[in-house]
Image (tube, rainbow, N blue to C red; front, side):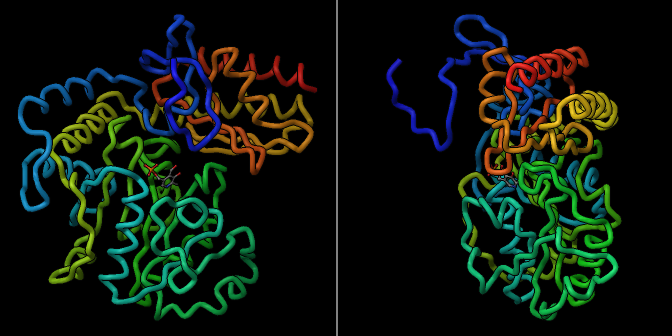
Length: 384
Ligand SMILES: Cc1ncc(COP(=O)(O)O)c(C=O)c1O
């Protein structure tokens, strides 16, 4: 094969030709177990039958329309999203990537409040990596390090913030960013209250933490808050590129007569809507939120057992099917991840923080989890 693909990150050379559930196969027939769900996308596993069928059915009807046109398939998907977020009255818009959903959430909050400041945690996706960051400059973003929060001295965290200028705060409750860090409950509650009571909005970036990943539908549901805007992507399409924003009626009404200058060709496409409804149906019929919470306990127990055995493991943390293992500098996660791939396991590695990520699909067999931790133990023994 010629080397004609540009990659933005290190990659493996194997030609992956087929994938089903947690399994992937290369052209030689070798099997790999996927502990990343693609990139957090295939929460239902690869090539889900219901999602595939929904795509096939919709292909013969209408796939793409126009931002000016409406269709009942997207309306049904919007109702489904409102139901699972618990936003009783509101609106949804469908887009194509998680980055875009977060960007549009920001734009909505700026336009609806006529303000231009957003508070976000310094190690979140948007502040660190966001690919469409038009609003990265200091004029718009107030970055705060949530590890600096002291519940006995909360005022020092909030000092210097003029909340009357704040359009929104954006939370990413669990995957900050890919490191699986959880801000203090009191901080999340208090920041939300301060922003809301001064007329701003709470945005929850659920691109990675949504769709059952943390053992609840959304990461914010582990906290005592209710967002005004929820941004989603990845798992919402199970591999098909669709993302969405759900907003309350209050936000939608504040937008009446205003424009956010966001034009996008695939806004509210019926094909994306059909996928979203099929994914939610699969979640509901198979009770996958409960499955995520239960299998997450096994994953956590297995990883904690490794922590007890290996001193190089500094921390194991996670919720549901989203876990991270942080290593000291004696061992490099890039080496572990490469060796694990050779053995047939795809594991995420964040070299910057020396963290391995485990985000398997929610339908994974418990046996696959046990197989993976057994192999990881062997490799750690080899490397020590
Ligand atoms: C927390 C978070 N938000 C947003 C995104 C962007 O999603 P997408 O890759 O679909 O643009 C990512 C991507 O990894 C992410 O980790």
